[in-house]
Amino acid sequence: MLIALRATHDNLGLEGLERITRGSENLDARLAALNEAHPEQPLTGWVCLATCNRLEVYADVDRFHDAIDLVTRAVTDTSGLPAEDVARMLVVDAGSISARHMYEVASGMNSQVLGEAEITGQVRTTFSSALASGHTTTLLNDLFQGALRTAKQVTSKTKVGAAGRSSVAVALDSAHLFTTELEGREALLIGTGALARVASAELHLRGVGTLRVYSPSGRAAQFADSHGALPVAPDQLEAALSSAAVVIAASGGGTHVIDPPLLERALEARATSEELVILDLALHADVDPAAAVLPGVRVLALESIRAGESARGEVERARELIDTGVVRFEERQQIRAVDPAVSALRRSVKDMIVLEVDEVRRSSGEAAAEQVQRSLGRVYNKLLHSPMVRAQELAKTGQADQFLEAIHTIFGVDVAGSLSVDGARPASETADPTREGLERPPMSVAKMEQMRRDLEAAQAREEEQPAHTQTEHGGVRDV
Image (tube, rainbow, N blue to C red; front, top):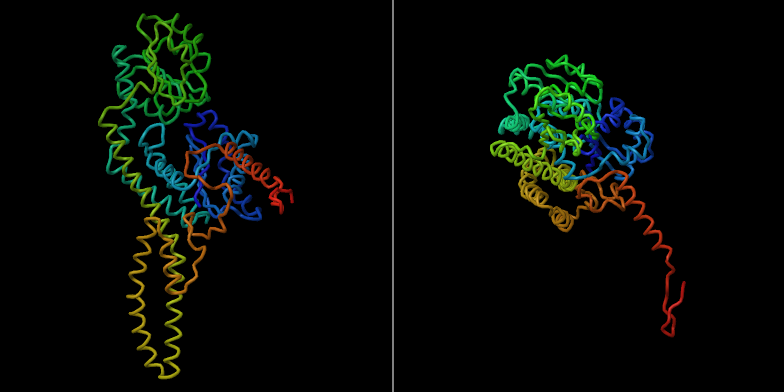
């Protein structure tokens, strides 16, 4: 079955993400070592995707909870974080939810900047590496190849990349309502991620005179060198705020970069009475809400800045393409699930033909046997064509059990246990008492494991309850 464990910018913030991705270049090797040493080898295949905005492991697994434990331990080992922290930071989901997330990621629809092309290349490189290492499976190949095909369609059939870039443009257009032209003025950029890169390009396009960049994580100098900006040290942030015409905050580190005392000092040192406009575009606000209400400052938060109708239309078209891609992936998995049954039926009929041809060969010679073999071969193709087509149709609609019952009844072919929507493996191999209800929103590994412990405790209490039997007088007694 398909599962995904991930930590991303939208559930951790960049600071937390930086902690858990530390050592991620060793994660693939660690997964391989742990899986090889595990008596059950719960991972059939896996792909690790690590970027500046995410750490994600997609896995084809035989045993659900064993696989989660193994991946969590691998991330713990490579990151150096306590196991309980990793369990809180990683979220897990399975099946179609995992598939949809992969399609959205590959298409740039789960990025800080919608439609960014960089992530598609990262997904392609990651998948190619996993393929070369022999760590993928048919299920994972279908997932990543389908996601990359859909990403290509999103790029060629929509302008969602422009829609993502326009979020910064719309924000600066909003800033123009409260300040004068930016041409020749100073601007301050907080953050060095994908959104900051787009903001830098847009600010230069609008002719800012001086662009300064501050990075809470210490990457300002490196970013400034490649983006025509001046780095701002921590002790220079107050001065940079006071001299800026506009500030774009896009670090999203999970903590407030601009707090009331800092902003008050910057406003007091300001040489103009013009409002300081701050565009807080970070997913996790960079500006303390208490600072946003200070006189002399205008903070436009992410939720108050919306792209235009045309941009929203492009996003909707992209999501429609993703919907179609995910449906096709799911249909493909359903079809693959009946492959063992189809193969069993083909083998059964071929065995009958072989027996019949051998009998003719013994009684009538080689020439007659060859003629019978050709004739029965044509019958074989015609006989099985309709059942094969019908099998695919039933599989797509989730009715493959009808096909299995029919071929067992008609042909006597035993295909019990060959059908599994978890990747075409027998249900007995993927059995796990707490897997029910996985088609639900992602939850942390810690929460899922707590649910598992609660369920096991409840089952244990139930088993400990004394059994009762009825006496001959109608009462009950313990047994």
